[in-house]
Amino acid sequence: MNEATASLKESLGRYGVWSVQLRSGSAAGGTERSEAAAELESLGFGAVWLGGNTSAADAAPLIEATSRIVVGTSIQSIWEHEPAATAASFAELEVAHPGRFLLGLGVSHGPRVEGYNRPYSRMVDYLDALDRAGLRSGHRVLAALGPKMLELSRDRAAGAIPYLVTPEHTAQARERLGEGPLLAPEFKVVLSSDPATARATARAYLARYLSLPNYTRNFLNLGFTDADVADGGSDRLIDAVFAWGDENTIRTRIDAFLAAGADHVALQVVEDDMTVIPHEAWRRLAPLLT
Image (cartoon, rainbow, N blue to C red; front, side):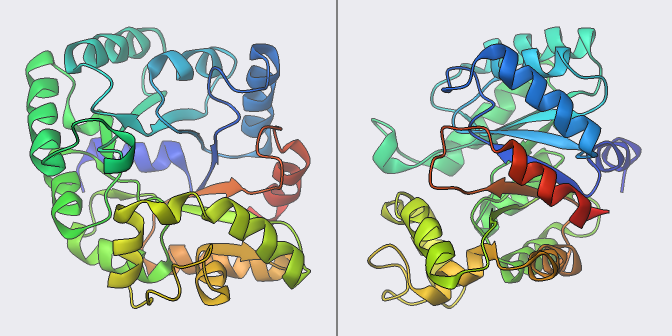
């Protein structure tokens, strides 16, 4: 492991929060988002991962409102942001707040991008352009699921930030990455001990992802079946990609990712209303992670 990656892992710590509510343009106002980031820092989380197609512009207000926490994009779509502009905005933040912004890049999904083609080659080209613009590999991570993209995150970035995965995927990813690169999977949490309630909340949220081939293909590669990815997801799939239950159960589920080789777990609280910042849920989660 090189010194830069070791420093990055130390900065991120074991646990972060993945949130769509803290990006610019969400239902929450700018002051509320900044105050929420400051509270996450005080609760001991090491990172905020901004969900959806986000950029340095989304990260900057949160970085300015805090003193330590790392803010990352999860992800910035390579189809919607030019490499030169990406490098310039990164450099501006890096000068003002060294080591506080981590660029997470992804290829998005065919159904969401007009003219989607050759995503792996497009990512290689994008990384080449970032290299030419001076944005070094140690400052970027890739949303990698399959073997080729994981290898690219190993060879051309600081590591991988897989989304919507299981500990089994994490173990496979760690084997492909080796020990050095960062591996920071996202994991969804529903803070309910009632099976019917928890699964209903999870299923309603998961349904949007089951129309995206990248995710369904990854589930099938992990041993799930066509029946598991139909109709919003089977109980088996829900229980694999969401943690729900009492505090001890949720902590055990999170620990499984670390045992499988994750350096850091990005925790996404899933509730029925995903437009509201889940302050209370984050406060409940924080003591489980000490």
